[in-house]
Length: 482
Ligand code: BG6
Image (cartoon, rainbow, N blue to C red; front, side, top):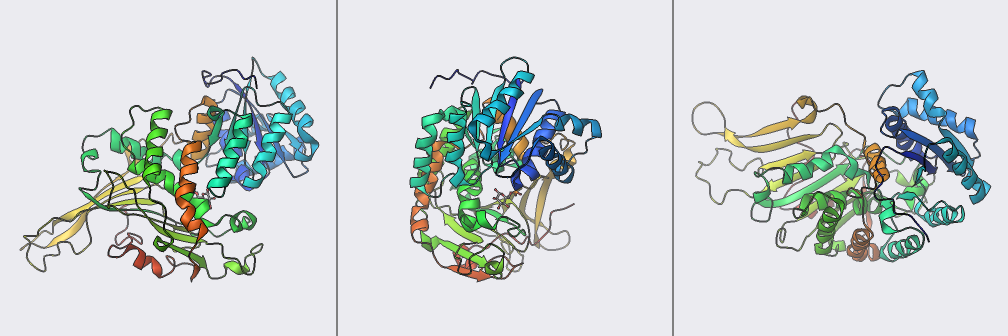
């Protein structure tokens, strides 16, 4: 296939975005509002969006759909002029109209733009539909000058991921492929890299000599909403762990990259995945909330897990013997996204019995990956007054208090822009994704039974045995300071 090199192209150029699954949930909640923001803020100077999906919409009804979505889900306010301008950039082609109709719509959009516009194909479609879309793009001759964003889960196991990569590479080169993981687009996730590698203070203690264990905990209060068809075939492990939690783990555990550029960072992340031990089913708790089987669209005998907690081991010099505990699930007690690092306790205590030393667990460094990113370092200090009574104290930082909170791009906005710029730093490589499926094989082949848990709890009781002798940080004993 004759393709010109597009890696040199900068952001000040025109784009046609072809949005597959344009009338779906992700498009409504994140992609259309995100594209509106990037366009209204001038970050994509010239833009046309061709929506396509199985629904029988036309240009007008798609524009109405998009504006309603933006009004409902955008975190920012837009005036009528801005909304009308965005609506004028939207076109729609029903998927059943076929590749020729799509090609014509893209050509019409391109003829309205200056120069030679580039193309961004966003596949917001279920995994089983992805290759069909790739074929449509090939048949419509829309591969040239393009990049393609693929949604997760990328495959369902190693074999399917390898097959998907092989088929994709028949049409697109690896540098055109952007496997999105929106957790890496979150400001707080990227701040892990800044925190670790822009400071001399923390990196020296970032290893097995000082760190006892790590928790990556992402409980959600949400249930399935309208996503039963997707979720039934996916479950919490494939939906959240293989994608988001492992990616965060890689940022947390990787060696310093040789440069802040895509290939170095991707290489260091891949080394973490290579060092991961296969996930043993005995280190995994799967759960299903009571009532899941009655959700519309869920099979009466479904064994899909809506909760998963696991112990991950990274067998390298930095992390050997340091367990990483991961947890996520639906309909849990609280919505949180934290990384919590527990440090070793002092080897010996000179404090008298009853002083309180060690009583509230080890010192912790905690990152809150929520949109308002926060950090906290907890430690023992002396309680004022006579004698030597100790208490757990903390240093806390909240980005929003720092006057830097304003210009945050939402994760999808940031990642769409990066893909347009050809920057793969925050995306997943073929090798990385194949390896995480490979370490997942023992679990996927032999999953432990799903255990019931009550909605509004923290998961099945077995989570406590999994983490013993340690304890889950959540729920926090003390709230973040406001
Ligand atoms: C998505 C999962 O990728 O991430 C959802 O499919 C999950 O099940 C969501 O709720 C969580 O993302 P965020 O950014 O809302 O924490």
